[in-house]
Image (cartoon, rainbow, N blue to C red; front, side, top):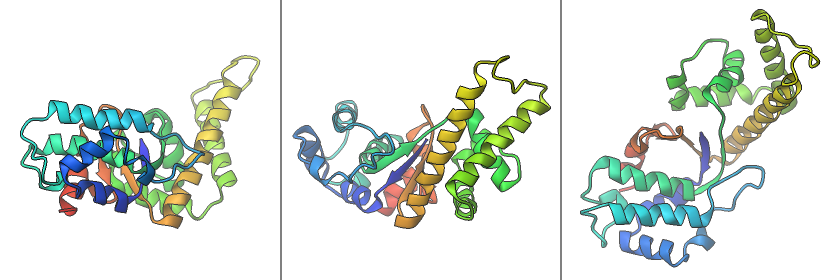
Length: 222
């Protein structure tokens, strides 16, 4: 999962007194200051993320209402849980895919093999984004589809739609996902947006924002 994050907005929320932050979420007062969404991508709904923040508050003991998240005397993982919800709040869109497909989108362009865990490393995405800047969206997407076809052929799999009805839908899915990834990272480069990197069910502290862990990013706002 990749999210484009407005870092200034994120730092501002992390530096806000917790009581003010929770009141703003409960009263929907922070919605107008949420970064504008990119309509080409999905992002979390206001009500869902407000609910996540308030649920965090109900489940967390020892938080001090008068101080900011970056100064809270609570355990690191709990602080990162709220930080992750706030980063999602400050995102303008997200891109996601299965790890198994991600190999197809990254390995050919960088010309080497990766493990699934390496996809969580900010330096991998920085390198990939730089390489992606040297090719246009359509050419990149076509290269992904051609690589997928060659991998199937090496495995002895058919490329005849009449023999496998999933061929054309899968091809279109790869084309669409790779084009949207190119668009996604192009906007991140052009506008200097922060990249939040993680996956479903990953511990909040293991998510990365820019070139550091979410825990380090939270500390940097203090």
